Amino acid sequence: MKKVIEVKNICKNFGSGNNITKVLNDITFDVEDGQFLSIMGPSGCGKSTLLYLMGGLDAPTSGKILIKDRDIQKLKDREISRIQRSDIGFVFQFYNLVHNLSVEENILLPISMSGQRVKKYHKKLDEILEIVGLKDKRKYIPSHLSGGQQQRVAIARAVITNPSIILADEPIGNLDSKSGERIMELFRHINNEYGITIIQVTHDKSKSLYGNRLIELYDGIIVEDKVVAN
Ligand code: ADP
Ligand code: MG
Image 1 (cartoon, helix red, strand yellow):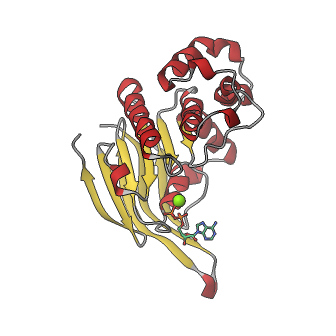
Image 2 (cartoon, helix red, strand yellow):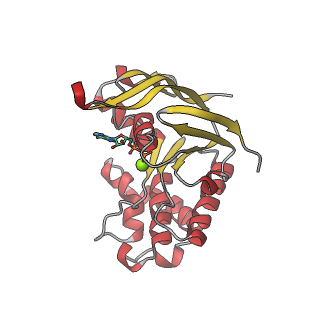
């Protein structure tokens, strides 16, 4: 299987001197193309830090991250931005939607921001709206939607560029269980239908059972890495 992300001996500290926080301590694992990986661990154990490193949003103190064979530490910021735009979709706990834009404008934002013509994406937009179940809400603004619906907009926005990887930081941490379940089913669908690799982090063990692989973090190290059948 092809590796889409390789995490090699990653350490991450914040601060310095007497004020140093050692968050990640020699973390190594690979993510294979098409996996749906859940990274689980208690609050403060370094899940978000690890996810941001994997997406090139922050740099490790030591170690290497490879995204599709490219060592991102060796790339210029401009090249990292290009990888983030074309290969990675980010999903966050609090959706990060633009409040004065409609659902469809939010979804098309990565397209308009990168200077492409949104017209070319109308068919793809229709298809994605159908998948996330928001066809009838396309003209709504985010504040007129429920939390679960807003997260579905965020997922649609992450998928519109056809990334190979989605990095999701506690994507259902702010949702009731029913809406959360729907989001997880949506990830599963995107994973199955488009073959997009999904990496989600969660502090809730019950939410980690949707994927096909589980990594457990504790005190900055991997304490478990296993295949999950479902
Ligand atoms: P999790 O997502 O598992 O809750 P985080 O990765 O957010 O954990 O944080 C892990 C630890 O690193 C925490 O102790 C947090 O306070 C610390 N931390 C995270 N980001 C920073 C930062 N930018 N500066 C200083 N400390 C940070
Ligand atoms: Mg976090």
